[in-house]
Image (cartoon, rainbow, N blue to C red; front, side, top):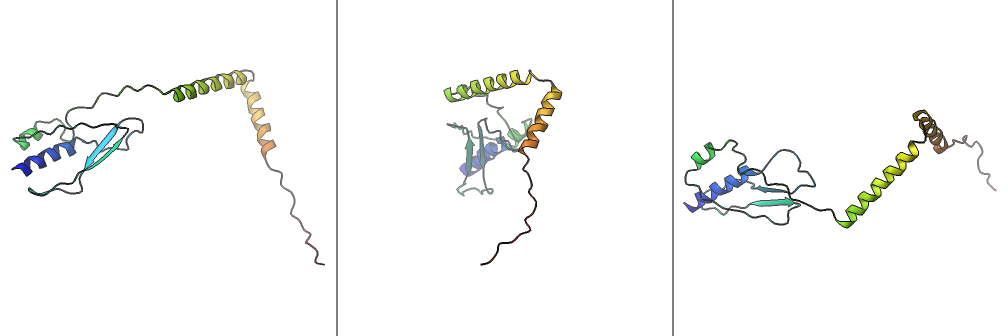
Length: 146
């Protein structure tokens, strides 16, 4: 009986894990999975993968009637809702980087405002021509042997 309750809890946990797409790199994300289903009496193995998560808390519930429980859910693949976003403050290094990016954009836009769009196009063309490497004609002479 205990193995059935454990399997029910494992199934409930596995059904709560979102399965669509790649997780966003900046948001906390975790995944629980199992390579197969387990019979009563077998020791289950669960794989946990987490990204941007410092700590996970789990609650284990015993479900008396699993059929009634899963049929009462609106979506059988998730229950309990989504956790609220975690408030995060920027580090001093991130703040300094954002400061430099803002000032670089301001200075660049100030210079760009000095020229019309046509003049900027001519400058880009002139700059591209200067960077183009000059092609020299193929050498038709050979090294002389002594």
